[in-house]
Image (cartoon, rainbow, N blue to C red; front, side):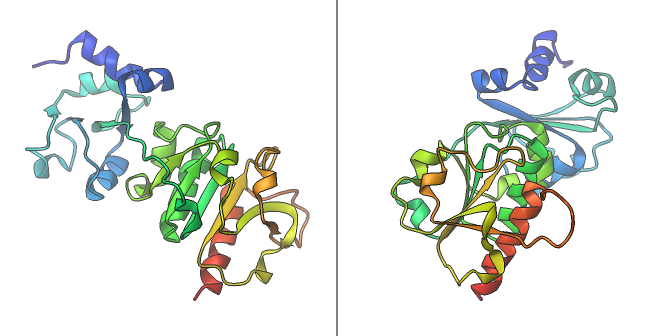
Length: 247
C-alpha cells in the first residue's frame, strides 16, 4: 500500500527537534548507518526500504518493515540523493543513577553544539570503553541525524545521559578533569580507574557553572602555532592517556 500524505508529512517532520520530542521518535537514513545500528541490535520501530537496499533480504520479518518505491523514498529523504533505507526509532533516555559518576570513566560534554563533534565523541567513548557519556542539555541533540551518522553505530552501544552538568557533578567523589589550555600537562596524569573528563566547546571552553566542580585541569602540550584543538581531537588525546596509564 502506498504511503499516505499524512505518513510522509509525519516522517519528514522528524527532521526537526520539536517534532521529534512531540512524537517521541527520531529518524536515521542511509544504508551504512542503518546497517551499523541494526548490527548493534538497535530496535527500530519502523523501517522503509526500496528494492535497492542490500540489507532487505535478511530483514523480511523486521517489525514495521515496509517496502516502498524510489519515488516515495525521495519524498521521505532528507538528502538531495535519496538512500535506499529510512528507519524510525523511539526516543529513550536513560536516567542518571545517584553515585553513577563516582564509578568508572565518564566523558562529559559541556555545551558541545556541533553535531559532528558530539557524534565523534560518542565514537571515542565507545573506542576507549568509557562507561558513559554525560551530555549537557545545551549540547547538540543526541537524536539528530547528524549526531547519529557521525557516531558510526556507537550511538547504539554507548550509554548516554542528558543532564545539567553542574547539578550532576555536585558531590561527585571521583576526580573531575577539565580540559583547558591553562591546565597541567596531560602526560603527567597518574593512573585513575574512576574519573569524569569534561570537554567544553571550542568557542567558550568549560562553562562557569561547571568550573567549581572540576578537581583539576589538564592540557595537551602545544608545539606549533595553532590556537586550539578540535574538541573531539582533544578528547581523544586525553582519553588515550587515561587508558594508557591505567594499564
